[in-house]
Image 1 (spheres, one colour):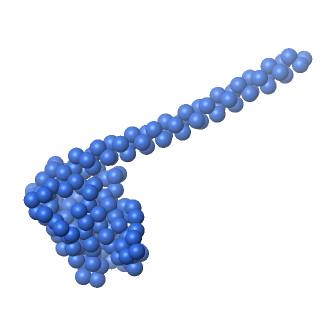
Image 2 (image 1 turned 90 degrees about the vertical axis):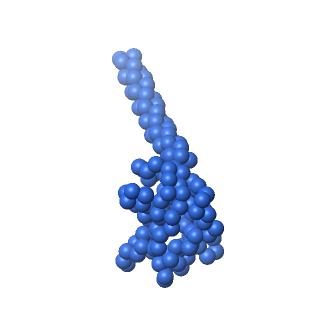
Image 3 (image 1 turned 180 degrees about the vertical axis):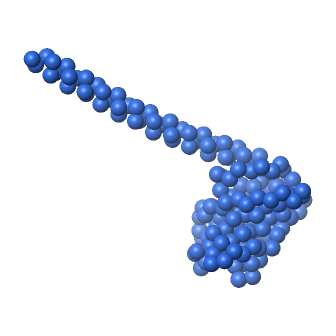
Length: 154
């Protein structure tokens, strides 16, 4: 599902939004004109009970006209699937909020993606720790060999 943000009008235009269709959170793309380089967009989300949250958006690609943003995988989602009101909060020299759209959202794929992202991060950290232990072990072996050499030369 794609949304185009018109900066001058603070208007968020939905492209082919079907109010009866359920959308995955990680399938939402937000297009902002490339001529506005110093904008930081966030997604405002409000459930049917009035609970609100702000989600980080990450720039993930550009085309000739737009910078394209998606919900950042590092966000923690505290909502259950259902109907939400979404709008863009855009930081530049001031704070602007777009008009809102009602949308049915499913968070299951996003949560799986977040788990995969966390596992990848843990794997990178474990790899780094293993490499450090390996280097320290090699240094200990070299130190031991140097001590053995010094003791045997006497």
